[in-house]
Image (cartoon, rainbow, N blue to C red):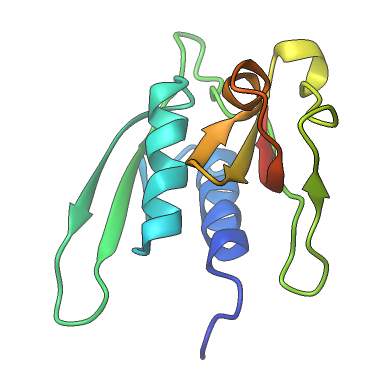
Length: 132
């Protein structure tokens, strides 16, 4: 069954893995998915990830991160901009997520970055998702 929104599919797989207390989640590989996962690792929401080559597009194995009392570092994931309804913000419209506890991943003219990085560089763009 073809997937029309790979980012939403990836976020759902990670969300389900966190709710089931899995150690890892495997998602389809794309440049956008890999960039989002790289930001999640850099911001400390996941432990690590690695790409797996196969005969098709490849996979990304995401190692989920939990703290000492087995609660996940990812509390929530929300897809903002969807294929049927794109959500864009200008440089002044980039807001913080949950008072700075979470991040928004924004697609700018200089690539994917967090909301804090976009505000620092005075850039706007398409809000891909929010993670807290």
